[in-house]
Amino acid sequence: MEEARGIQYGDRREAPIGVFDSGVGGLTVVREILHQLPAERITYFGDTARVPYGSKSRETIIRYSRQIIRFLMTRGVKAIVVACNTASAYALEELRPQVEVPIIGVVKPGAKMAAAVTRNGKIGVIGTEGTISSGIYTSFLKDLRPDMQVLGKACPLFVPLAEEGWLEGEVPMLVARSYLEELCHSGIDTLILGCTHYPLLRPAIAEVMGPEVTLVNPAYETAVSLQNLLQEQGLRSPGIHKGTGPLCEFFVSDAADWFNRFAGRILPAGITNTRQIPIEEY
Amino acid sequence: MEEARGIQYGDRREAPIGVFDSGVGGLTVVREILHQLPAERITYFGDTARVPYGSKSRETIIRYSRQIIRFLMTRGVKAIVVACNTASAYALEELRPQVEVPIIGVVKPGAKMAAAVTRNGKIGVIGTEGTISSGIYTSFLKDLRPDMQVLGKACPLFVPLAEEGWLEGEVPMLVARSYLEELCHSGIDTLILGCTHYPLLRPAIAEVMGPEVTLVNPAYETAVSLQNLLQEQGLRSPGIHKGTGPLCEFFVSDAADWFNRFAGRILPAGITNTRQIPIEEY
Image (cartoon, rainbow over all chains, first blue to last red; front, top):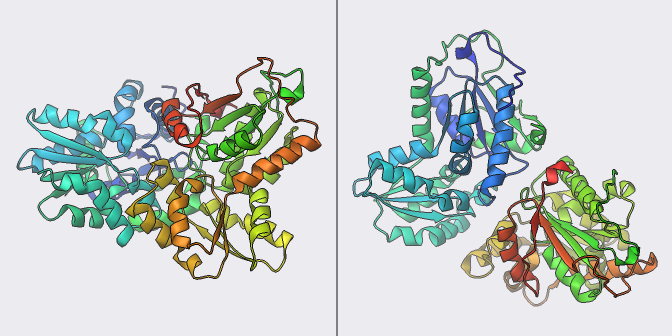
């Protein structure tokens, strides 16, 4: 992969972690990384001009992910987190050989955590059409435990519901009930929230699924995996910021103001420094 | 605007009409053109890789529209129909001076028709966030009749509902009721379906609004305006096809198969010849 670093860090450990998603959903992963790894810098890219990824083809998602990784490399990142389930499902293994920094997705950590919490070995996965039809969660879960029973269900309307901020009330409840009814009666004891937007709808999903079903948000385990990876590679931040740049920086492909407003709902501190970049040119 | 015609027609009248939309919604306009102007060829482009347009910024929509117009010009079109309300609202007047063939949108025809059918001068408009916040319907309606009262309401979830084919039952009814309740009690007698996807949800919208409110689909009047425009400019097809190409051709920016399936719900004849093109390169 072509690399045109605009920024270089003398001490690689001080470089930021690149995180990307189709839009704002990946901020739920950023929230978890900030919580577990408070000394790390983050460079986030949200592809707000081309969101959603969930209904697009594998080839298109790979092309978009490649452009984004090129952009993140120009920011001198020391590792990349693909904080989008659809991109993790379609593009991660394809692009890994071309990226010269460590790269992880959210799917493998999510599968690992679900396998650890299930008691009866029956796991449900909800996600975009792309993630579910790729069968990637099933494949990782069966690698961990071959007798696992996995039931997938695409819930395409959850992303626009979450992006519209329609998180509670009759409509999300009815939509959740329509999508999840089958899973409710399937005997699963664990449900993976296989799309970074879905944790925003957690109250409605939890109410429909009931207290017997454990909801797994892959963001938590992704931050744990990231921590281990940085440790192994000697890339953990020494925690002394020498003013090489801000702790977090945010980039989007469409207008920044809407992103800033939405980010305030997810991240503990408000964002105001988001910049728009022409991602198609990378 | 740069023009690189791949196809040229000896008799300009035999050239196709270029029609574009953010995705499949514009096929409701194609359906109306085919019905009213059966002798015309159509070259359709659906920007399925970058749909939806409704929540994106004006600058992004103008950039996307410019690329699409460049592409349509390479197909030798004799006129262009912007079959997307958001692109009509944001990009039409900006791009018109740069396009050397006649170009029309769906907003002005929609406003004209609504002004013709209203009895009490109170008109509702539903559309994407972009279309509603642009205030373009209000502006055209007040040009036609300054005392007109116009109420706009953005209904962002209607597009994903329609694209998922979730056209009837409890969920679209509840979503329609949530969005339209205010308009129901506002005294409007006419409601403009200001997004090309919305005619697909007409049954739910009609049931919520009741029989006293006339629903206006701008597609009908757009085809009438197109017919007048072609007539004025001496561009009506003579109706004799000499084998220069197919009657209709379809292009998309993402995988063609989903588009083909969806098109079957809207157009009288099925589509199988859709081609994917790299729109970002235009």
